View 1 (cartoon, helix red, strand yellow):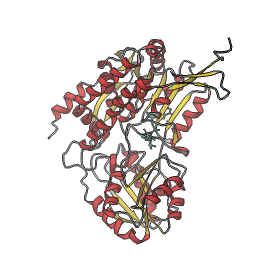
View 2 (view 1 turned 180 degrees about the vertical axis):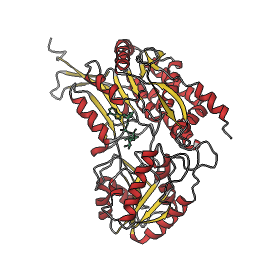
View 3 (view 1 turned 60 degrees about the vertical axis):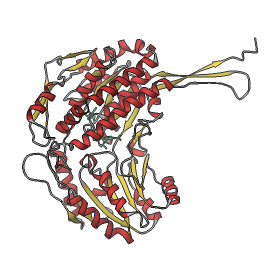
Amino acid sequence: MTITPEREAELLASVPTGLLINGEWRDASDGGTFDVQDPATGKVLATLASATSEDAMAALDAADAAQDSWARTPARDRAEILRRAFDLVQERAEDFALLMTLEMGKPLAESRGEVTYGSEFLRWFSEEAVRDYGRYVTTPEGKNKILVQRKPVGPCLLITPWNFPLAMATRKVGPAVAAGCTMVLKPAKLTPLTSQLFAATMLEAGLPAGVLNVTSSKSASGISGPLMQDPRLRKVSFTGSTPVGKQLLKDAADNVLRTSMELGGNAPFIVFADADLDRAVEGAMAAKMRNMGEACTAANRFLVQAPVAEEFTRKFADAMGALTLGRGTEDSTKVGPLIDGGARDDVHSLVTAALDAGAEALTGGRAREGAGYFYEPTVLANVPQDAAILGSEIFGPVAPVTVFETEEEAIKLANSTEYGLASYVYSQDVNRMFRVSEQIEFGLVGFNAGVISNAAAPFGGVKQSGMGREGGSEGLNEYTSAQYIGIADPYAV
Ligand code: NAD
């Protein structure tokens, strides 16, 4: 289906451009704005109000005022709102998909996939909202009773990155709504439009004023700084880069805030000689090229066992070299642009340094001339173990391949990073799956699977990839605190 300029303009005109504070869309207190551009063309798509510190405080005022009554709202009512929001996002799936493609660049087919994945957090947490169980047990001594109930943590600050504009918001807003928390959402300034439309959808689904406030802004720290110093804020949930996450953890220490941190990754993709190679290539394409490689779960290092290294790398390079670059709205496009010029230059510097260190480009290795921030899908062979590209989050369509001999060596190489988010293992030996999974230090393991994100599963990292889990039953716990009531022996009266 061809996307006409009229269709794009009509959709963009339907996106609220203001700040959402206490159920109303308003201008920034200083009248400030910022532009959002299309990374495929560099053209401005929309101009949004840019929240100031004063606006952030007004958003927290609203969240704080709504907290008590929201926490007392029956779980079934909160669940119904999430379920209606899920239905509304489904109804507008094409709008959400096109909006993400316009502001973020990924091909429409991938944006549709994100609508499915992202909206599922609304449905999942609508189901979890009514299953927030406590417990009642007798102490081991056999006399007193233990009663445990879970309570919402209180007003939250939710900070999201630009790469999954819908899913990163629903992964936080879904459980916060389910748990009975109010919130201030601060989307990334590069892709805030999807969050703006999503917030409008939440209001339409019946979310009361003040529960969700949205402060898009060109100054991220101008929002997080004052909010995190205010004792009314109880939690910060952040998805983004490890350096910013570390800074926020330091800031959170002042008021001992609850924190959830979904940070960067450096995923190994391990191919053993007993793997089904065609399946491994298919998985490698998915794990590498989803979101043009701009994913925290993106396979960043391909570790291939020596006997199959040449065949795997050749098939993989052929598949990567056949991908068509273009604007995400075109049907033929398999690879969209990177998010901006800086991102493209960073990817190219890593490739250039690897080539200088002796790696060989089997395909790609260049930025595309002309408008937009396009980078060719690239496969690098013979990458030296100490090359910077193996130690950095590439965040682009580049696959460095290295060769290993033994299972022990593969595990050692996989673990040789400060990150610990996603990992992938291809083998037909199920005993190996257990051995390797137990020994690799990653929060997620894909076994013969290149894409494993699912709303029903706990998503999150270890080491410097963060703390806390999103999705699964674990996702709700991030927004609740256990309260223990100790009850004296009822027979001792
Ligand atoms: P980023 O850290 O630059 O920004 C993330 C968010 O933090 C944005 O909203 C940004 O405006 C805000 N921010 C930036 N500086 C800030 C500051 N000093 N104080 C407060 N907020 C600040 O990350 P990004 O470039 O938007 O996203 C890419 C990164 O996100 C990658 O490292 C990727 O791995 C990571 N990521 C992780 C996950 C996960 O689930 N672990 C998911 C997606 C992305």
